[in-house]
Length: 415
Image (cartoon, rainbow, N blue to C red):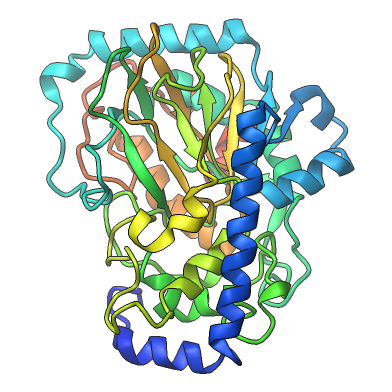
């Protein structure tokens, strides 16, 4: 039974039950809010001083298998990392040029109209970003099945705990499942394509879905300090309300690959680099000043909005990522608050391929069966609006373009 079909308790009843399970709720939430505010202030102060508040690591440092200890600890704290030089810059720039040619040659601008069904971000403050419904270009397929990306994602997956209740043997961190996503090409001077702060991967489900309640079992108890954002337990058991652009896979990290140089004020990514901010977000909706039927920005089938009205303390920590270069990759935890700058004030395009980390597990393997059928037909990836713009593109990637690794990642052959 999907989350759409499963009976759900009323929000008011569920909130009262969750609050009752947290001893001395008012005192506990005051502690959480104070801790969150203090961490956000430290982030803001560090960014103002020019400190590195977002961890970075060179790709070469991952080739031994694991991320070096001190950097790994910082990533677990911040929930984000920039991997420098994941791809050679010349390779990424070549992919960028090939994508531009692919879009123009196939008449994408004449053909494409945004689907009315793609409403995932409709409640956020700003207009939808200029994201192209392109999934199966050769550059995207080449990047996803690259051995360099496989090394990177395996190292990132090993930051998670796989030996906890609810994880028991289902996950294989060194085996990756392809999650086909789109591309972004943002023109300099654009002021319409920002995204206000939000969290992907479920909104009201986080308070209502049994799988999510197990993921956040420590938050909704007396043991909120024991919540580990990198505990994989029960992550594969969550169910989301169906909606275009709601991810059906378990992603250990959302991510993108830079195809052009971009930095602050270039219409780039912003984050609150606080991996455990979800503790505050979940408890915030249970506080006395929130109406019974309100979950502070959570609406079914939408991104979870993070707003000054409800979440001012944590938003103090919102910062833009530092300058990145073509071939760098950026990875952030699926519970991390993120946004896109409202205005691109730079002089060059701000272009990325969205490529996440999604380790093999039964949940992800099941999704691959739908996705590989879409790939063979050239249709939009199953999680996204059914725009199907590539069906007639003669130069889209085909099965023959998949390497042995790519075939495994796409579910065509077993690991």
